[in-house]
Amino acid sequence: MINHIVLYPILVQLFFAIVLLFAWNSVRLQKSISIFGCIVSLALSIWLFITIWTKGTLTIQAGNWEAPFGITFVADIFAATLVLLTAISGLAVSIFSAGTILRARFKFGYLPIFHFLLLGLNGAFLTGDIFNLYVWFEIIIISSFVLITIGGEKKQLEGAIKYFTLNILASMIFLTAIAVLYGLTGSLNMADLALKVAEIENRGLVEITALLFLIGFGIKAAIFPLYFWLPASYHTPPPAVMAIFGGLLTKVGVYALIRVFTLIFVGEDFLETIILSIAGLTLFSGAVGALVQNNIVKIFSYLIICHIGFMILGLGLYTEAAIAGAVFYLIHDIVVKTNLFMVSGLIYRIKGTFSMRDLGGLYAHYPMFSLLMIIPLFSLIGIPPLSGFWPKLALITESFKIGNYWLIGAVLFATFITLFVIARMWSEVFWKDGPVLNKVPNFRYFQLLNKRQKLQMIVPMVFLAMVSLYIGFGAEHIQRLSSRIAVELMNNQLYIEAVLNK
Amino acid sequence: MEFLLALVTGLLYAAGLYMMLRRSLVKLIIGLILIGNGANMLIFLLGRITKGLPPIIPEESKVFLEPYADPVPQALILTAIVISFGLQSFAIVLIKRAYKVVKTDDLDQMNSTDEYS
Image (cartoon, rainbow over all chains, first blue to last red; front, side):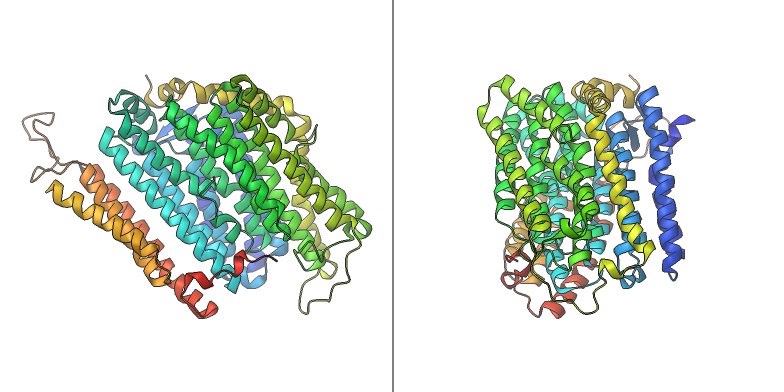
């Protein structure tokens, strides 16, 4: 039974999370198990990806209950790609954590929770049941609550309260939406829902349900005007946690939006208008927010919001090329954002501050690191031929086709502001002669770390930079992948047939 | 019965939202709990309420002959209750820690994370 491999990425994370619980007392052992677990998970994800690429969508019915009655796990090419990206980011962050997280945090079970988070992410990508998706979302948020609060600093707790409240509210709205949808259709299987929702005559009710989903996932994806929790909380935990949050947590919201609005709620003009306006406003407000900040991590937080707009825009345009652009952007963004927060972590270790005003002179003292950091920074802007360029090209072309010049304006504005912010950051952090900073007592500066810890910080950054470069220079492959994903997403019949065996 | 449940659901959502809009941390958590209960009631309500008809097929037939109580919403509610129980216990511990560290329960004063730095 080849279908079993759909479950392996989920089971392997669960297995290693439990094994890590048994190694509670030995931090060193935990680190090794975690890195080993992430490598195994990466290997399994690659296997899953290659199988799906050659054989097409695989499904497995939990407990052998035929769909639509049981819980279905579906690995189509979109889900498999995201599982692969989760494994890549997970491996990088696991190595980075081993080098940067304080021992005290490891003592309180940082690594098991980290693997539970990856478990939730893989589950959310692979499930084909809307209520099961809710459960995976809860696993993700409860793990992220622990990761954001572990350590218990004042700013962490304050950030956690905002993060916590809005995420629980989002879950409740999501649950409400599921309740209404179940009342309307009597089904929870996403493929079955797609068939049944299309037949409902009362479109008003369907639109309201769709809006509830949009709000619920929108809070998690941090779209305009629901994003205010993100810049208030993302800069509080340690950089390794920020990296996994920035890279994957908002993206799982985007994944859910793309999945629900290409499979279940399709062809509603009303929704397309709303999604397009939201996309434009997200691009605009995220960019303006990034413009005024001085703390580099807060700038990155606002850039997350800004760049969510690109993916939502692709979803709103709803053509094959636009969806392909959105998916390409998603692939690029997961790798780059994870890397960016690790970059900020390295800068923090070297200088002991996140404030641009106090930073400076990195290029003079660390030219090689600066070159390493320039890759994610410039990929983010989308300077050709780096990875951010290609999806933006697709999105702008598609906006031209429908003749919506506001959207083109928003995309160009957001890109330009990103360029401006990164250029300013480059001159402030790398080129300027920084002021002489007072040494913070008891702070583990980069120079004081031993060789292994230094390597544990640099290796994941090099690894992700390589992946980024591949996405940029091998854009042809990624484009082929995202086009295939877009074809599958636009023809939801394929998904339905794969799940229901019709 | 439906009317009563709809009324209760609406009340729970309204009260929950109202409590969440207050400034006190404790009221925030109470608001979240109320909204969670409202959502559970809504699932129960929308799963169609049937009185005294368990989903058991009579021995002599192979299909359901009359409308039966749908067991799925109850399974959903059970799952949702367990999840929200976990989240709420975490929330209560979190606000206690936050109160001890920040020394206020006024949400308006918890703004150091938004300050320009």
